[in-house]
Length: 79
Image (cartoon, rainbow, N blue to C red; front, side):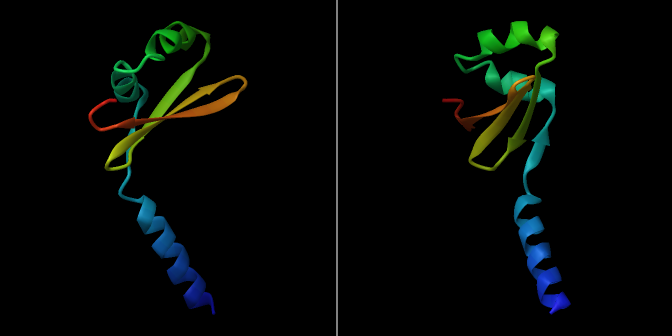
């Protein structure tokens, strides 16, 4: 039973292992093509954090602030 659970956990982890993690600079470069970029930049000095992931066909950008987090999905052609 333990082997079955271990193999299942390994399979789930490997599905997400292909995602490339983007740092804040890379994520902001991608966000520059979106309408929310002008709202994000002034709040960076107030503690706003931006992280991203390259999911293959699209980017997943996560914006963290004091109230919580929000996700932005952007296609590879930045639309």
